[in-house]
Image 1 (cartoon, helix red, strand yellow):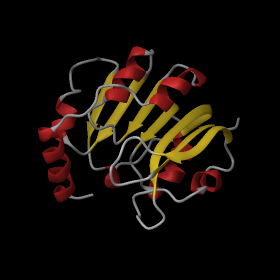
Image 2: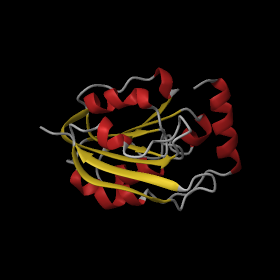
Image 3: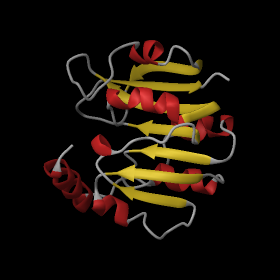
Image 4: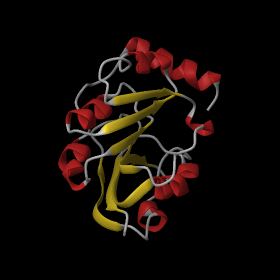
Length: 177
């Protein structure tokens, strides 16, 4: 991402900060994760970070938009706001009990996500499916990319969240011990 990306996302959040409800897949499966540290990748307005904090997690919330992050900063001491370009940020190894990635896609992060989760940690991922767009997942991609994980839930279905995309992918898996 670049400064141009930051401006794009800042402009989006200035117009509409977005919905405050946590992701349905997170609400449904958060209880699988042992309490401890959580990572919310490309957290946007922080809706999922706030939910994780309310559930007792210490959350690292990462996003490029300083406008979005300003809505999260200083609101909850359990949330560590990291306003940074994800392209230059490294996920610490063996740190998190849960990592969530909701509607953001960067394949470069896959190995870091695997190493960032502790054994028994939970990965929750939601993305749009589009075979032609680099920032979307391909069908069955996650079943291969995280094949060493125990898959708890996987579904590809019509999306409710976008006018641009027809399909969404939902993935919940536990890192094997």
